[in-house]
Amino acid sequence: MTETAIRAQHEPAWHYRISPNRYDPGVAFRGTARAGKIYVLTGSCRYEWATGHAELRPATFVDAPDGEYSFEVLSAVPCEIVHVWLLPPEFRQRPSTGAAKEPG
Image (cartoon, rainbow, N blue to C red; front, side):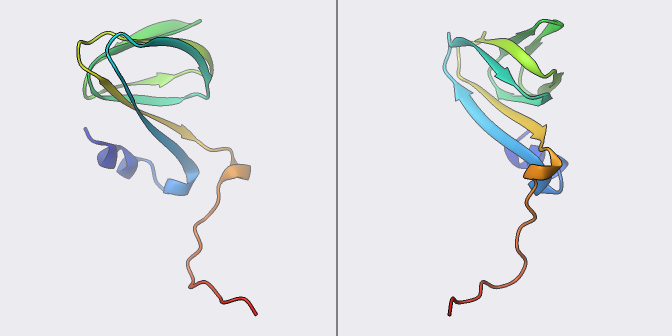
């Protein structure tokens, strides 16, 4: 599993936010996020939500719920993740297809 392969699964690209991140061993934090898929490329980690938890290893993913979570790197090597979520319709911007016009 690669970031490129993950991006290819989520088309059209302008409908999704795709955020790769890398965390060093021992990193732990709390946060809030939109519902989406979390893919692990390297290392291992644990996510915990009010509704449950997931321990992820390379080439695994989870459908993460909306809301607060805690995260912890479990491996002795950095953990690389890719978080993907569907953008609300009002934030989707179709890329322009024509050549830019010069002002004037």
